[in-house]
View 1 (cartoon, helix red, strand yellow):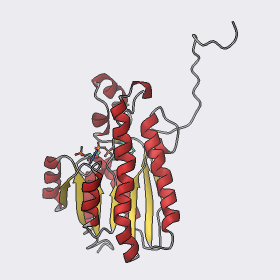
View 2: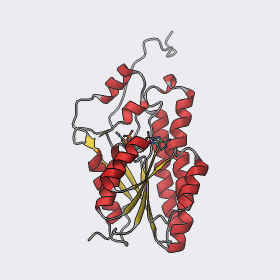
View 3: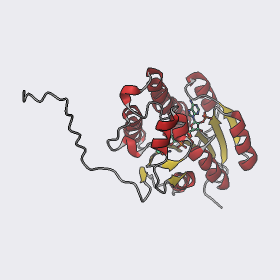
View 4: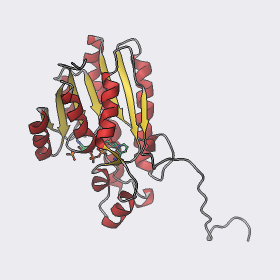
Length: 253
Ligand SMILES: NC(=O)c1ccc[n+]([C@@H]2O[C@H](COP(=O)([O-])OP(=O)(O)OC[C@H]3O[C@@H](n4cnc5c(N)ncnc54)[C@H](OP(=O)(O)O)[C@@H]3O)[C@@H](O)[C@H]2O)c1
């Protein structure tokens, strides 16, 4: 029997990808899981498959999100909902994409954590899991998305300081490329989408990341898995980028 049997989890962004796989992983371990997303049809399918409870919520609606979360006794909150709007060239991004990415990936996560923490602290037990990204840890040509995930990196670190001694654990999970619907939702232009999506490597799949989340959540109470970074074997980061611009005035003329 899993140590998670009978505990309650909330997973945001549960209608596809990593979130849906996490709902499966946690219900398989006997948890009561509340699955949140905007697409009702996808949530209904997930509920049929797993027995999870569903809530059609836009996490950017902070009043609705807070009302929902404060009404539940949440043992584990998986902040997974996220978008990569504006992930291509920053200069080409639509201003509304910048807001959507920050509102979904950062502000909603702050409000969700803030809503569940009083209950967790009062009970002396709880677990916050936040989906970061390697894009939040290392430079990438993904300015607003990297900024949002960089914010998650410091949010998790600072939350650990705020919460030490309360019994509430905080975990950041930072995947590299995962084969999900992420790029379909992020990019409207089919050519750009294909160029960023079809990279010809064996990417992680959602279950790989859900397994990492389940590992952290299932760890014995005295173990706080602080950060998990996982990448496809065929991906890495680093190196140096030079791009000589022939039109530049280098003061040579
Ligand atoms: N795929 C990757 O390569 C990768 C790498 C590193 C980190 N991540 C992170 O992993 C997390 C999950 O992404 P994924 O790859 O699984 O992509 P995905 O398949 O596109 O899933 C994103 C989920 O977020 C939900 N969502 C988006 N905006 C929302 C909103 N305003 N309100 C409620 N739910 C919302 C979507 O549901 P609805 O559209 O139904 O609302 C969907 O369920 C994200 O935080 C992402 O940044 C992904």
